[in-house]
Figure 1 (cartoon, rainbow, N blue to C red):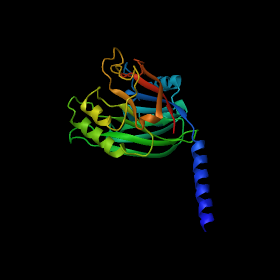
Figure 2: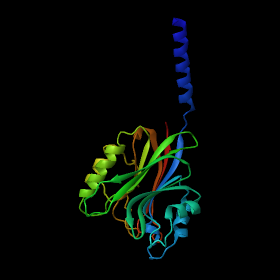
Figure 3: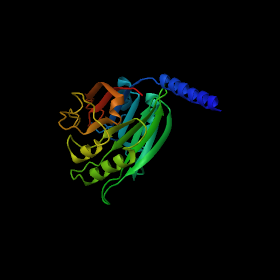
Length: 262
């Protein structure tokens, strides 16, 4: 009996070691893009331009904010699906509210298939715009499960809603087991209350470009679009770029190239 137990423990140990040795690092290119509900800064409607920007930079994962789903102002298009087709990426949409004959919220585009998702409704005052966080999970080609969260916090100067929303994100995702990227238009500047709350669980890359201005696209002077992550010891930042395509959006686009090591 004793020999049987020893053999069993040895099998478990060897099996665990083999599993760990199979874990491989992933290099991921991640984008945050506020698409201004499909309009441009010229107030026309140009999905090909938006898709062209994404295709040019070739991200693996994209968090889209200000996304319309079959609204009148977006000509009844399903923007996540249309952009997914134009970029050859998988797409998901999360409604924050009903709006203009359709819906308005967040979207995620991915070069990987989704293995899980959740629409996390964020708290807000009764007269404020509803907001959401789209929580997605993908499995990469290297076999790592990555949680990718796209969100758009309240835009008002009064921080009441943003603080509630930041607390809700931390409460819901702060202790997750998954390596998680939190990406989007947080409408919050460095050292603001919402950023300080989120920073309890999510880190901003230590890169010289990480706090550059992201809004407005012409002459950006405030940093409100962010890429953050948990488990900071597992992420290495190769690049962090703020790119101002001032026709496609009124926000600059934020792109990070990250290495995740399990």
